[in-house]
Image 1 (tube, one colour):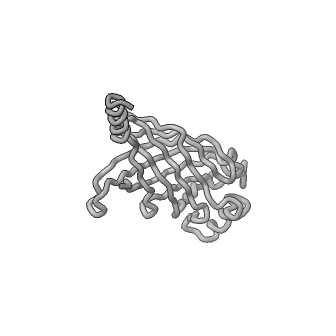
Image 2 (image 1 turned 90 degrees about the vertical axis):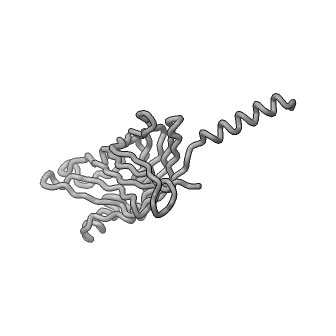
Image 3 (image 1 turned 120 degrees about the vertical axis):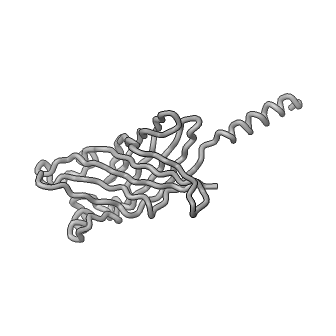
Length: 189
């Protein structure tokens, strides 16, 4: 390789690394996917999962990103022990057979350099289907205690639980489920 080609190769390598995506690790103590589901049309039950892990990659300049999130289904919490046990059982989530749920992105949509939605696939109850997340709020700051960038978001989505094989109580209970996800992630060095 002559010196001219070497210089071009070095410039290309430096340029590519300068615009590489940043990787953020989900902060489990500040990340809680929660959901709302109908209870016979007379009330709305709300639950959350208390154990979540995963990574987020963002390249705000290139307006690209990726999510890979794993939810521990055994961490389901309605704030009501009897309901927790029933929902974890074979009738609903069947956490012995399906101990995790996962969300993997296919693409992100940005407005300027802010992500506003994610098209991805949710795997729940052993079934994988497309689910679009709307990012209602997104912000990154230099965390005063961690001395690293931390990004946070509020996201939402809706899906039909019957599409994932969770059919308990249908048709008395409406199949639509609303998700509300609070997430914070710490930039890796």
